[in-house]
Length: 153
Image (cartoon, rainbow, N blue to C red; front, side, top):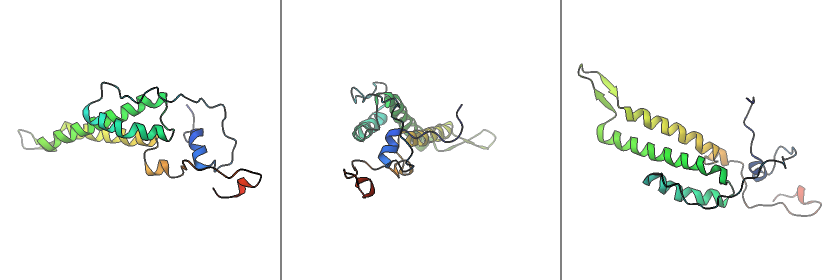
């Protein structure tokens, strides 16, 4: 198991402009773009809607590869689970009362919490949070020439 921070992907370092000025890993594996943006057939309706909204955007900025499709599908499925748990809580209420009169949390409350945590983690992995995107610069390049590296893009 590696220690310290997770390594930042080279693609993200490039988008940030290689602020650390350390040599970039030119030998990092470069996964192919997904052959299709078709969602997996097992996604529910909420997950499917989320997939159709998110996948084209991620592919357009180069953050969705063929290896990331399953991760994105898991994120979309977590949205479905959160939605389903929320609907259950809205219908039944967050707490039940036992026969002896004590309140007990609805099981869907724990399911919603687990789905929310998974969404938070996967959003960070896929660069979908403001902090994950904070340093990214998409579509800009530095001017060419000998002095280009000293000029702001």
